[in-house]
Image 1: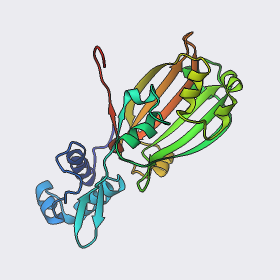
Image 2: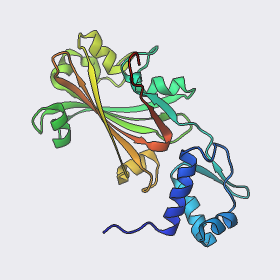
Image 3: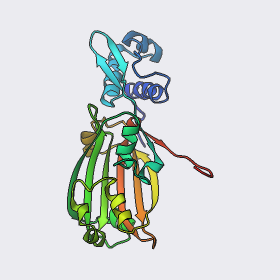
Length: 249
């Protein structure tokens, strides 16, 4: 049976909800430790621990001598359609970040790997099949990373498009290269939420209690064959996903 959250964790969750839901605006100062202790019926040491946890999640800044302030930066607002079209030289995360006035960065590592069970199942290939892996850490300059994004591509596609082995695949990235090669791409994406693993905490600079979104995207060609799979792990409060529905959306 899972343990109930500690008092400090409960305070952290309550304050985080106020920030994420907009009750506390960016730049706003939180009540003093004394006021929070009175509100939550806790001692000041517990409140202080909760505020440290909130800072570890990247939601507030602790200004010694001044108090605790909600971080000023806005999350990257990501429209689902940003991956389906090229805007200038960009798609996906970079297009969304630039549209929001951020200066995005990407750190990329490219290598060949054997597909594990989760990747093989989504690519519809046997476990151990050789694939090209493109592992990226993405964010905006001056702030902790927003997400990791790892892509696996079938080797026959790579043979046709050797540029996919390069860190910089050119304007629009790999999807623009696939379209230029005659692939008619259709996307499918699934989204879930969980707590981060230890390696994700280190890479994304978040605490163990900060939820992340996990997204699996598959790219199908015109023959409905999966040619590429991408797995994204996104810090929830640093990234807003936007979906439009209906005729003409």
